[in-house]
Image (cartoon, rainbow, N blue to C red; front, side):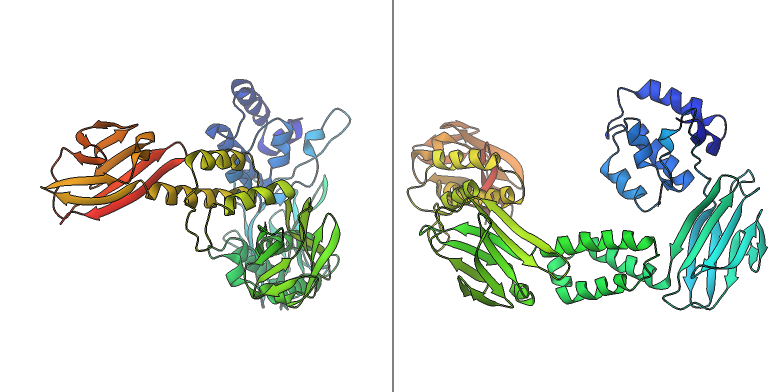
Length: 469
């Protein structure tokens, strides 16, 4: 299996890799730093994305390494299938980088101690026609200076430049791009890796323009598929932001909240209940439901088992959001904790919050994030009521609890971010507790910040803070 790859690196590669496998076969997971560096370095040396090769050998490659080697050339063959009857060759990388501009092509060649260019040809083509060659590292119809192979040629943005590597084992396409495709790839990656929310920097009109530019590339352009993959990731990421939430309200009406007004850019957004359409929005005009600003309400949906919101685009239908009945009911229970002004209802108990949190922890996907944020907010509001007052008296911090509920929690007082005292299950430490009034022993330092935290199973909650005057 490693034989032909060994030919690429020299005769010593196979025994080195085989020994490495024997020594590390129990630690081939993504946390093995030596193994991850090994995969990364082999990929860099060959110029190929070696992920599929090593995964065939049981390597579990980390997400970080996958991301770094994903931009390298895909393996031209399934080289792990080598056996006595099959001979697959991985050619040595001869090219580092390629630069295109309107007046020519520059190719930065690799620089090895050994002569890897012997019996190798690099063939440069423009729109399928040969314009120059590099044979045994000798330029034809081109120039070679300090390991830079250069061809003077007028280029239009749409001209496709191809570099093929040719040797006794065959012909391998090593590069294919145009000035347009390079700019497209850069733009797609900039959007995908942007730190800003994707919904604030993109519109469907911009996405359509990007798709049209990709569609305009020649059908024979192999890299077009890679660009379409990047575009699909970008479009999926953008469309996933259109719907903010789906809820079932206390009157069993289905409430679909759009993130902003971008949903009005679409000619058809459908709401399906159990695969049957119940409402539709066409460029901001609704039928089958009541649309108020960015909120679509559909009455009488108590029996809904699965709700799906779908955007129908010219090239595909896209599921913007899908939610099941059990999640809808759980969300309704969580929202029932709050008054209309987002304050917590007086009858809410810690037991109820814990029960709902247990159900939320069993949820998967994006809905878990939304539900967790809401239950955390409810927990914060509930714990805020434990302390009625926090003040400084006789040069000491004084914490007054609202009722006896504080005896069920661990409550910590901190000064200038350092621990001072606590009350845990009604037992005080490093202070005095007189009824519902707790006074840490240590005197305050004027000008320092002080705060009260509740440390509970679900997290740490800051409930009061002040500056000692």
